[in-house]
Length: 122
Image (cartoon, rainbow, N blue to C red):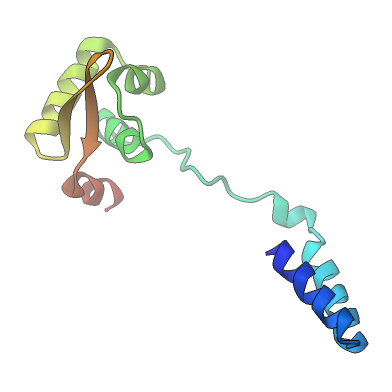
């Protein structure tokens, strides 16, 4: 947005439209001023703990955690407990598992389904 404003200002200066450039510069200065109360806002990520561990895992899937190791690191759940939660979510149709092959062998990727997205955000 800033480069476009600068281009418009240069164009108007070339055309000798002084009143418009002065008012646009004042407007730009007002936009760039920050209010300390506005900078301290609510966090973008919901920091409240979900009620169940299923919802915790489903929430992390919605946020983009696609591997088992990453999921285990974020949620701090035991290996067997996380496996049982993921199996339950897959049986209920809230997530799906895909095996991808690459240069370094097969990779298992976890995806949330539309149903899982709706359940988490409802």
